[in-house]
Length: 615
Image 1 (cartoon, one colour):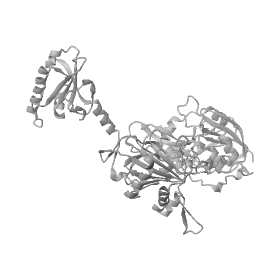
Image 2 (cartoon, one colour):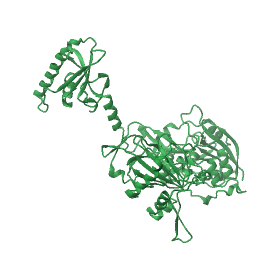
Image 3 (cartoon, one colour):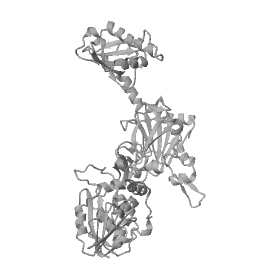
Image 4 (cartoon, helix red, strand yellow):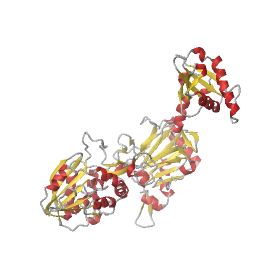
């Protein structure tokens, strides 16, 4: 123990601790007199305890040096610190005196607790807070984090020294204090840490230096050609045998001194193309990755290794380096030393089209631009049914379909009161009306219909929710909102309540609206509710104003957890939600065509519209 090397201690420097140690902090009643606990009385008393214990317990040996010191509090004599030679002696003393009447205290109770120096406790707690990384596992992360490639020894030691000498050239004058956390250098384009992107209209005066350009040209050739093409690092010419590298045009060098790091983040989707590449120089460090569903992983970046992030590792997982002076590798404290990283990126000038919208910075305006709003005379032809797949996206499958099947029973226990304005719409329909509830959930709106006056049937993507409807005598079937198995022009009303915000792309949202319009008879109305980005003040949720796609947690009650989950308490399950802004539902109806919006309103943190089929 580093702090315990001093001959004497200040009692206030020690704190109680659960872990056994060779220090005991003892407290007692205020009425205890100093002469009762003076060293000349206390030392023999403690030695007697240890001696008697050793006589009946052969696994413990007492010596005359078992007690190294007794230290008293400055302001009073009712607290003291006993320093033992070893932890075993401390355990014996604590076992024999704690909470028991003490003879030298005239039968007053003595309390003993393990104690540790504050600095030692802080250091230990700091070590315990750092996740251990197994070197062999951390050097082979390819199968755990999709899209991540880690290439060891991408360059030689001589090349490493040459790169460091270049970056440190001119007495390190190239390094700039652009940000407080570390020093950086930019080439090609300057990265703006406020906007988290580069201004493509303002390239730096000089191109990439030859030493960096050579590296940039080598990177696409270091992985299989099909992978490089998928990442956008190469493109094929007219001749299928001809392939050309797509040059990186932006480079950022970062200097990380011990104790410095970078906060968990995802490189801005729309700012750069599909691959982010980073070369590590000099020191090694642990980089941590976090998935939106809470999964965590870590990799070890060694000197001269090349890290390539693409796909999910680029667009979905957050990565960062903790700001600390050490890592725990194979259960040993490994001190960091200076590390330099060189990150290669390709500036992107078009909106992002990735498959991870809940992590993306693209906006509704970007999506509308993608379907060329305003460039065609016939809005109904802007998105043809064949122009995009009706199959669920990866996000919809994992974080909507699987989500609802998992939480169906808990959902049913919390969703029983119809929203008044939706109920009013349904109850206003004429007798004999045929109503379709697309995305009916547990059927709470189907229950309010008098079957003798109107006919309602529902459908949901979750088979478990449909089963819940069936057990209550409701007519429901499993269906997909993008391909509703109902005859065209057959319904007098259509409901879509809290459905559209679970669709991950503009194309899918438009297709879902078109399905609602298709099944309605001409002149009949439908109602749509979707979660609003603009939450009311009393809502417990508030969303990033710069994004519309989010992962929203559901606290699954332990009573409804059916899988083998070892977590205590409620289990957090993530769901995908696209938060609608004002006017967005109207835009969807316009894009879908053949309908007009009759009314729109805000209702309890939802945007809502009533629309009518016109042709």
